[in-house]
Amino acid sequence: MAKIKLEYIWLDGYEPTQNLRSKTKVEEHENFKGTLEELGNWSFDGSSTKQAEGGSSDCLLVPVAIYPDPTRINGWLVMSEVMYADGTPHPSNGRATIDDDNDDFWFGFEQEYFIMDTKTQLPLGFPVGGYPAPQGMYYCSVGGKNTHGRKLVEEHADLCIAAGINFEGINQEVACGQWEFQLFAKGAKKAGDEIWVARYLLDRLTEKYGYYIEYHPKPLGDTDWNGSGMHANFSNEVLRTCGDQATYERICEAFRPVTAEHIAVYGAYNDQRLTGKHETASINDFSYGVSDRGCSIRIPLMTVQKGWKGWLEDRRPASNGDPYKIAARIIKTVKSAL
Image (tube, rainbow, N blue to C red):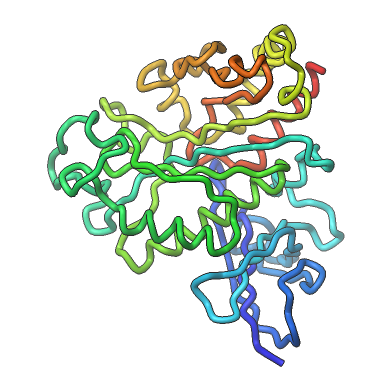
């Protein structure tokens, strides 16, 4: 028999942006294989996370995904859904709204973020009381003059890979102290699980560096610095195989009348980022185009070159958006066009 550490992770009920919460259960197991079937439900005090009242505060944690925890001996990361005591989904549970039980939808998320110094409350590379050199030289840069935070970013990548997350890449982004990582998964729920666990690993890693991660889509305000998004690359069987431009255009057009519904779940304060500047489309417009990063939805050039077989990229989701809710809304709209 061995004692194992199970880190149950969930999303709280704070608005407009939910936060990650977690706590550890130590259990004794013999030959633990790391499967969901070996895990039990747990509970927590929902009155402390804005998910219940004090008079009836228990909420359930139902495991939905498990990953090895590369930072702990006999440790496991357990992504969990929040349920009421009767087993019905809590309103904060965006995962339960995803209509993709057969994993027809594939998602690749590009998570941008700023690394912030806890002492200065500024992005790495920003001097106190001023600004670094204008953006332009930071994107995919190399060298200590323009590159800030690589040690943390590389360690985070290693942790995600060791945890078995389908981690696809990293790069420094356009603004100073801004980075991005990319994940891909076959199945919308799995894609959401992996983004949240990757965020959890990143946030926990900052504790030993004296940093924190800023997911606000425009943390530097109305300045000439890029904001942070979480571009959603998505496809289903139709998009991957149709070979028809008209089908692609019909699906894109299905997004136009429900623009407001998408923006409502694409992350708080996104109006500060979607201005029509800094590689964004205006939040008040809807557009799509081939290889156009100034559109709401980009049709990748590779999709066209493969004979209209591939995927689409929704460039509007903010860096602080919930991938569960984003995927659920995209799936609903795509299905409405078919």
